[in-house]
Structures are given as C-alpha cells and as structure tokens.
Length: 154
Ligand SMILES: [Zn+2]
Ligand SMILES: [Zn+2]
Image (cartoon, rainbow, N blue to C red; front, side, top):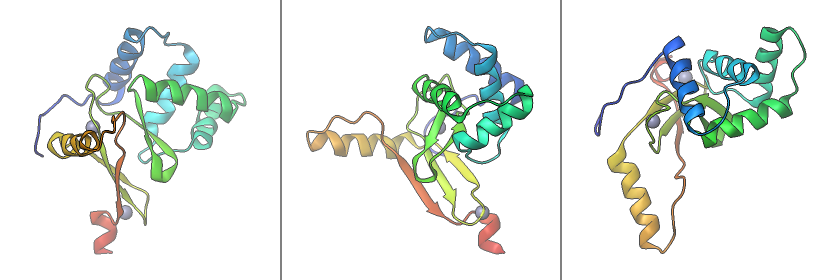
C-alpha cells in the first residue's frame, strides 16, 4: 500500500482509541455511545442505523430507536470514529480514529464486504483537482463498487 503506515487498533484497543478520540473532541463517552460504537465495530461490513439500533437493542435488552442511534453515528463521523459509506447508506467503524485520512472504500456488490484502503497520493490529487476549480474540498468521497476477490472467483 503506498503512502504511510499507521497503527490500526483492533477489538478492545479500537474501542479505547475511539473513546480517547471522542473525549479529545470534547464529547463524553457515555454508556449509550459505548454501546453504539461496540455494536458498530462488531459488524464485518457496513451497517445501517437500523441494523445498529437492532444490535444495540439486543445488547441493552431494551428497545433503542434508530433515530437516537443515527444522532450518535453522526457525532462519531464528525469526530472521526466512524465513516459513512455513502453509496451503501451505511456506517463502518474507522480503523484509525487517531489519523485523519480521506479513506477509499471498495464495496462488493455481491456480498457487501467493504475493504478500506488509504492512498494519500490519490486523495491528495482529488483535493488538488477540486481546488484547481476554485472549489474548497471538505470531505472527498471515494468509493469503488464491484466484486471482492472472493465473489470474483465464485
Ligand atoms: Zn483510512
Ligand atoms: Zn463479495
């Protein structure tokens, strides 16, 4: 992978990194937010606010509305704890909450598996192209739809 390497915490380490990141942004890591993050991180593919609300409801043993989950997800995206996969209308835990990247997502149309790659050279080029048109880029969205390696061979 071109560009730089960064630490990608997993499991509990990822939760700790996410908590640190959120608190640094001046927000509290409440029990509800922790529950939403753990549910989100538990999915192996992008999950909708409804999927996550369902998972949180199961964990909490009470009905949690998709609306409140949606608000927390929004907060997570703003604080770099989660990413929105626009073309799938779904969310994914950010594997590197401490590092700001324009992540690129490869989304499989067959199984929904989403691979996250970072290529700063490429994304810098996208930002520069926008600037060259007098446009101030805030959040480039780069998603590639297609077939993952598993689905391509089946
Ligand atoms: Zn990334
Ligand atoms: Zn696939």
